[in-house]
Image 1 (cartoon, rainbow, N blue to C red):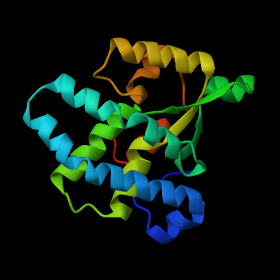
Image 2: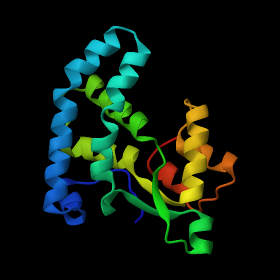
Image 3: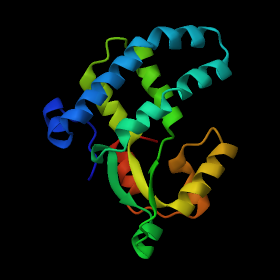
Length: 174
């Protein structure tokens, strides 16, 4: 599925099940209602505390982004060439980083709408198919290079993903 920059709620509803929409509403409420805590931890200027808090949201992000709505349709050349059945949906922006971006969006605009939240979640929570080996390599490299996004790591790991540049450009990700 090619990604575009903004979806309407009507478009999202055609791509999501009723159960997924309920989960997305709950996730929206979780972020919105935990903004006060995010502000508190951010005000402490303790980056470790902020990271611990934000990391608590990686599992809820996984719960919703495993749905087809978040699959970019992109695959590494190894997935395509090997036709491996042991593939992994890799978030090209790590879930903890995505959670922090989402909190920052609410921090900047506490009145962020559900549709805006969904568009940001699609932008920051979409996935690319990698082999399990590629995923493990990206994960271990990311742990050593915490400042980098997964999409910045692919090339250095020798992972080719046709269409990635175009996807990032369409989502306005630098």
